[in-house]
Image (cartoon, rainbow, N blue to C red; front, top):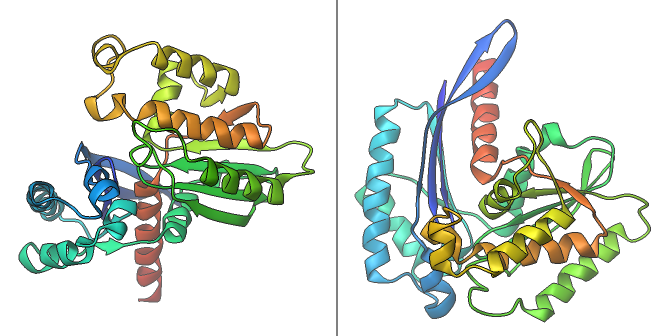
Length: 296
């Protein structure tokens, strides 16, 4: 079976095509294609509450290209999910409708809870009986999830993200809301473990020069990377640190959000599994289609 996931975020749009192999009683996921296009829909929406004509055009052209690839790969099923920027844009629903009518690609605008649910689906193998705080910082929103004894016990989406807070201080009111959520669900816990997902934390992890075969990042090392980033201009980040243009300006506010949450939970080290929304979408596609096969 082949599946495709289209993740329409506030800072970029991603497509992944994956093939599922079944061998000796085990299913394995093999990535066939991965594309990330830097289309910053959030820049329009968080300032003007709508997607500009220029970005509407680019978005439609990108969806045409992605849908061609989806058909060429002959996928059995696909999901296309749009998050914070599209759901807040006054013209988001009409743009999604135009894409369906003109191109044929079906896009679902999901809320913060559904976004968190899909991201959590990809974390299954990383959650055990300990207490975890999982944080996913996107361009427009930040999702927090608390796990205890292998079960999710609390979740909340906060209207604070790397694009939304670009060139401004993190909103104190939202930070206080986040801290109250963490205190309410984790105060009194002897040890809390952290998990960070999202493109920015993945890049922070890379910049920390990790040892081979580890996906752990200390909070101390995260602070060092933040200090390194803040010492460089955007031009220096592009040329000296080799960051992409659409990563160079948002990585600092994103890192500050991660640190604010993990500090509030008194976490000293986090796991960075390099998973995200698209991985949860692919797992949901697999579960949906496996159930169909079993019912035949």
